[in-house]
Length: 124
Image 1 (tube, helix red, strand yellow):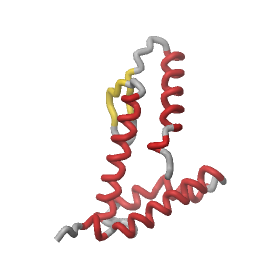
Image 2: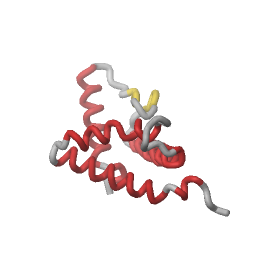
Image 3: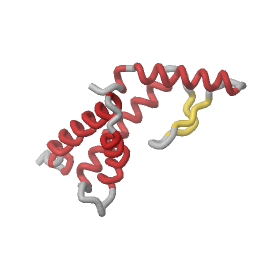
Image 4: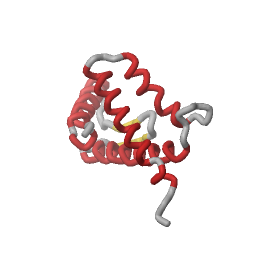
């Protein structure tokens, strides 16, 4: 039929996306602690079957989006010359190729600043 579970939750996904954008904006611009708390716990609430916000289809759709954005992030790191040793949603370990800690830290800071300025990873 061309109908699957992800199509059934597209409206909910749009609402969730809007909520995340607003909370992110509030947390960054005005330091809203409640918006920050929502952002910190939202994924856990969506994943947990005991949660009132749990929806398996929405969770699956969100996870697919997260994987795509994560792949974009890793591609940006590679474009900038970083060698990725290990990466998951929690951490990314790179080989800087530097021998001293201060130059490695400077390299990582520069890499992060460049990544954060890229339009691909910024909020639309």
